[in-house]
Image 1 (tube, rainbow, N blue to C red):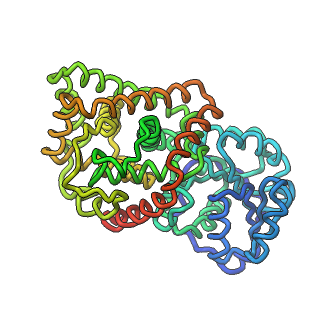
Image 2: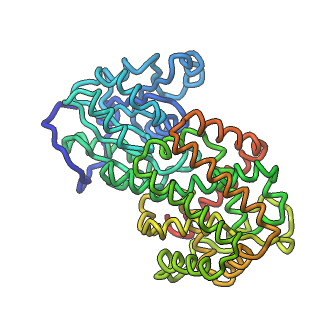
Image 3: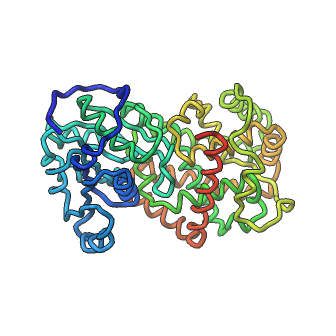
Length: 449
């Protein structure tokens, strides 16, 4: 690709011409980092006809990958130096915590006129790394697939960020990324970080806290009548789905995204304040707060719900009959919606940049808050049912523990807390990931997403 004058700014190409055969055979694509997402991208590019896909991972994995990638069509390199010297597009598929050091190592050797791109979930530190460690004649067009590696990328949101590039470089990047068959969304990196914080922070914190609470209480939710049926099925599946992934997927967003701090603190505040109102049985204030949150988030909503009982009941992990279901306060969902309302976040505004877990969280929150009888029951049990107070206390404590780790900024602490909880559910993580994937597909078909 010839070097061109640099043009800064955001935007999307109009009338983009699909990649031709000659381009797919001549352009060199490089991927540094062959984790699950790096492998997904590499396979997608090859399947779409891009012939020159160059990959590498840690030097210690070279011999292992040499055997496993022998017949894939990928060209394996020992390190990133040879990749950045030949590639027209270099994608850094590394953990957010490591993006600075990896770009600092390989970035200065980037081919003249090439494009650099990253897959991290937090774009501000990634952009800073590219600006600091790549030559000024290198284009920066980065991306973020809003899903995990086990989700089919077809029609899922894919954010593309034009930070520093010519039209030619930007359009080439888009043509290559179209191999994923995703729905491309164009944002600035600041808007991306704000929206991902708005959609993902409370999602991750709520369901990671649920897992930690159940582990602390030595409770498997599929064996407990308080956690069966409808909404509870989705809660359990979401929790298992998050813990079936790698810890760093969530740690980067929580610890490195500046926009995440306000929501982390507000979610913890919502859990704490609602729980205090519950144990003091301050009914008037509690009901007023839930009513205000309901009005702000769901007051103008009408029409079909994202989820229904019929859909949610199809994806149960528990063999306990639905008629044996016990009451639940749904403190986690009450706190999520209270958090959104306190921060004046309309979650429906961000469906264009959603993740599958966020869509499911919004689905069950909407189902609870837009089903008056169910919400009334949850509020009543939250205030006066002493039998479930212990479960709510465990959730409150787990949330505070997660927030403390995040506030300290400790990746090691985050990893330890994640792995400790993950180990408790190890036997059901695979099943939970598979069943939740089916639920994601069903929800996408219902909503046309």
